[in-house]
Length: 180
Image (tube, rainbow, N blue to C red; front, side, top):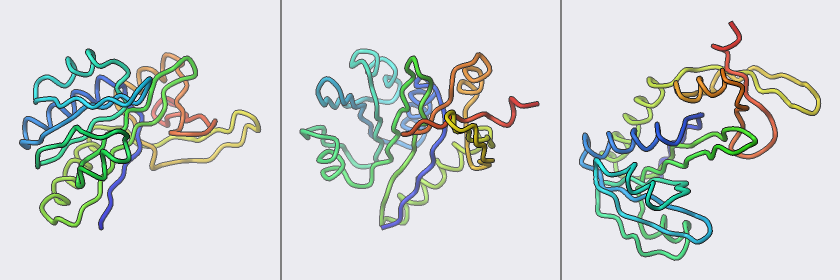
């Protein structure tokens, strides 16, 4: 099974708008998911992603798929088992600590699905800026990370002093295009 993945910093509303656009332009079905305090899945139609996400609250994941999506699952793991070939958009939360990375991922054996997922990955790369330095806040160690990506919204947050955080861990990202 071929897998795709791209981690990048983005605001939740940018990701919701991206999913909405892709659903409309590629005829995809979608769901939004909340993980806490309980796991909830809500189907969503193109043009309604932000509204459904707002109603559900604390949305952490969007899943898109050509085939219909079964929203019946007791956990995120079982949801993905029942809905193979989903393009998953994990929304990095913004907390008092900063903005965590988001992730776009999927896996498939279907050549046509893989072609679309790769196209959407390219679109995401084209919408984002590249390059950062990863900084360990405890030691001050610095490492160039040219594969780091971020949206305009994340750029504006970083410029305003909001720390950019990894999916997990304590390092910080300093975007190269802010160092100028």
